Length: 117
Length: 117
Image 1: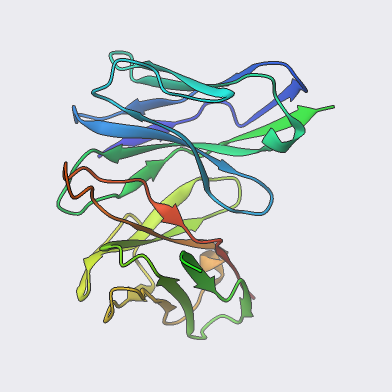
Image 2 (image 1 turned 90 degrees about the horizontal axis):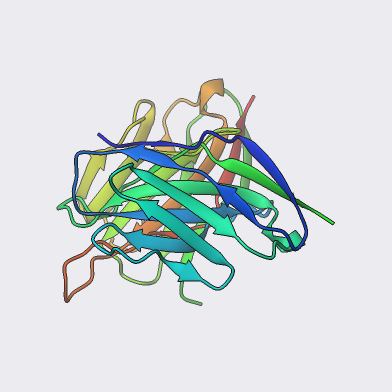
């Protein structure tokens, strides 16, 4: 079984600054995805960024980037130029790359990020 | 509009009552999932389905029943609701990439907030 740990229940950052959210995971799988989801107060689950474990290059989506350390089983999210709209709960999630019972995800407990004006 | 729809958005009921949460997706995705999210925590898998008439238990299945007679619908029933089932429930769907066979990220509904008094 997989586990995902987010050790920072709450974080805050000033608008326009950079913040990094941490995530560690444990798995015996060699092929998998890691995701960061954003959940604003509206409760929607929004996919922010994904990383395939077989790719060495860290994923980037505009202001969002990850630092994927496969050997250390670490997957942090960096948000640059933070905006008020980034205020949300952020979840790290693990999913096997392929599986006959496809697409089950394991989630961390989340980090609540507050961006301050 | 294409997407995944959950109903109702909010529900209040009493202990011992039966309640059914509905989930409908328009993509014809093979895989569908039910998660629960308790206050301050991540999502935990209740049940999932790989296809019509194929369902399986997730991490926290006790007290829940699912069915999937049609690909597009995946209702979740609490047969005799208990206060511990007060939670936000998310439905999700996904598919595998037809070329690679890789799992694809899940698409989530907007959630149902269920309160059991």
